[in-house]
Amino acid sequence: MNPATKKYSLWLIIFLVYIGLPISILFDVIGFEYKFYALTVGGFATYAIFRLLGFSNEDMGITSKQWGKSILHVLPVTVVLLIIGAAIYFSGYSRIIPNETWNFFIFYIFISSPIQEFLYRGALTVSLERQNIRPIGVMLISTLLYSFAHIIYKDWLTLLLTFFIGLIWYASYQKSKNLIGVGISHAVLGVITIIAGVIG
Image 1 (spheres, rainbow, N blue to C red):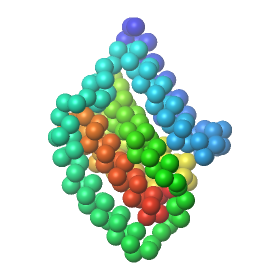
Image 2 (cartoon, one colour; image 1 turned 180 degrees about the vertical axis):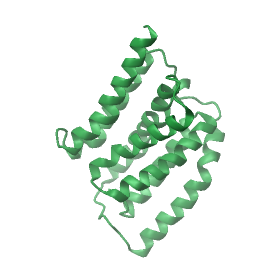
Image 3 (cartoon, rainbow, N blue to C red; image 1 turned 45 degrees about the vertical axis):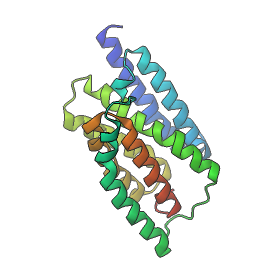
């Protein structure tokens, strides 16, 4: 595949998966209750297409290299935010009353969180880097698109919080290029914020 075709293919994926899916859910083209399943399908499709375009697993952060470093880099902020989330939960404050089942949390921890990190930190980052976009541009585009995915909740605080944590996860991922650490952090913080009723 020539470089121009590859470049256009990458931008098409960004438009369809990273912009098209959230908009489709926002306007109920895809039912809100199917949001995580749609994201999962989008994740697997993106992975398959990226492999066809010549990206290796390691290019996309799917590797065992520096796995310990990836966890250590994100551990401090994960612990701090976990404590804050627990404090909010035990204080009895809740913006949103959670109604998720155990099946949902199992799916969220082992499938949804890793796929979200693959999409926004792994695949998206390397695709933007290969197009010679400056590091600050890669950081902003990937983090804005991650935050944009949460537009489906129609809640400004969720958008703000996901942008903030997206910056932290981006910085942590860049230090190791391994998705394990940010994947674990995402699962832990996602569960505590959902249980605490901070985000939906």
